[in-house]
Length: 423
Image (cartoon, rainbow, N blue to C red; front, side, top):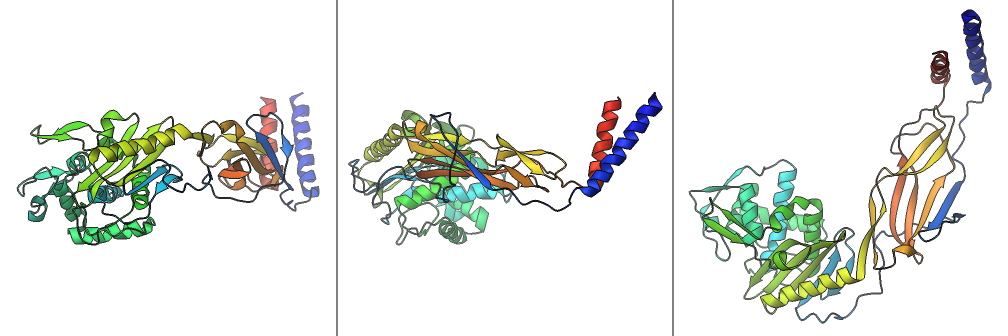
């Protein structure tokens, strides 16, 4: 009986191999593209024409022109952190003195150096004569002492220590002048076209200028690319030197505004009162920048006004989640009959509050693809829109490799399957 069963296996295998020669070996092109469209408030599915590509940032409202929030400071802007969408602006490109908000760029360069391995949080940083002689806000560094990078960051973020800024600049670049060159280079890379830095701390100097827009740009780069900076910028009270140096955050919003995450204050008699304020509520993260406020109280109250406006009128919803399966697609002449199409990234959408049910999802995917297929290969895309305006686009990719069928791999597959049947 076993011999008959074994002979049957051999005959069937030979028959399959013979058929594999008869089957045409040419590949078929990807089939015509089908687009499935559905709305979050509908269960129906219909075929539609794929929309043309559009910018991912939402066109949330008509141009925000005029000072409709009644800001009394010289310049202001409200920006959503993830997309960089501007929700409100007033004189946002006017070049003004930033004072210690300058330190956002100094902190950014320090964090980038940590991330790329140039320095570590445990490194001990010396204090030069120049650093120890800095005026303004400081922790009175002495040339005989060293502090760790971790301690320097804490002093810069919490009490805006000018002496620590200069010490870090010299540690990273050899001199403050060379460090400032790096600051200006990084500013250009970020598109901060209103900015010219003359020092690393923000003490008034001729030509040391930026805008609320540029401050929002560098603040966004810092807090989105280096989120652990919030471990420092959310400190309300702390100490250094074994408790001998008390630190109290200059940013009062950390204590009295729900969801505040930072970021940096600044003031001089010429610059007046500046602030880059960041906050997160219900997955919505905002940056509010105030420049040239008449008083410290005004800069905080007007930053609150900007943030309140953002949280009251907008929301951030997750549209896609990385690696979630969108659809299983048939594979032509592949060793597998199907391949899972998955989202390439997690994508959120910034929308007006209360409009999430109006989001329309347009998925552009073929019904069949030709082998071979590489893991991560783009198979299509999904476009999210509201009232015909695109708010986000996400690539859809192959979850795994699918090899093209061949005489060898199919013969091996058939034999493996038959052995499974015989067990």
